[in-house]
Image 1: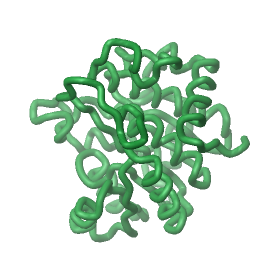
Image 2 (image 1 turned 120 degrees about the vertical axis):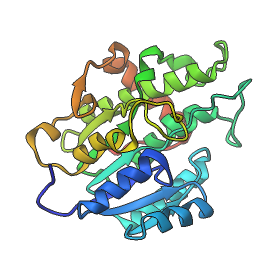
Image 3 (image 1 turned 30 degrees about the vertical axis):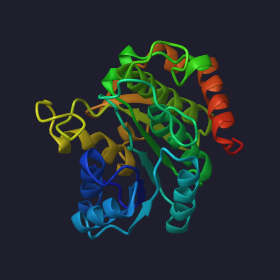
Image 4 (image 1 turned 90 degrees about the vertical axis):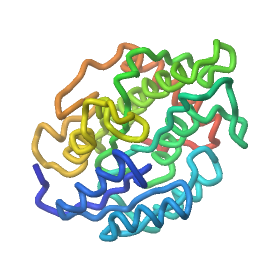
Length: 264
């Protein structure tokens, strides 16, 4: 499973849950890991959980400015062989649509716009992994209404849409940057704070595919442009595979963030 050479990996959203377990597994396998947390307190707790980590970068992904600052700090700790875009939110209790200080809907900003920005702002690594969800099956990529300003508000719907967008992001990066291996991963319904205690999948199983894609030199781990769960390939949702939809999503992210992807 392991590659022959130690790799350097950034894991976003690694202060708890799947991200923290992913970091633990990578470090236990002999790799260099940089953690990420949204604030100093969470970063300190994460470093106490995995003191062998190479460091932690701090930034709230619901802020455009903090996401840019996070990218700058990560550049100082890089370069990275792999970036695992693990951070995500699911605002189950949201009764009505809210916006961040940037005027953006937070589920879209954290789950879609932030990984787009970090991909654009960091030197392209050899491997890119975007965390999706089996709930992407219920999502729609409405490019004219990515933030559900005009559709009926649904916190669940916003999450489903965002996770479908993450698959589209992964496939777009695979297509645009053939020298990088880019994939989307559904970790399953995992027993974390987000998934709840009744989820059927333990956190280690939910982290295994990301770890494998980040560090393995097995041929099966080096395929690009896939949607995977438990180290097996899933069918890619039709909308996420649509190149026109991908390009329109990337253009919307560019306009909203003011950040452009590097030239292919």
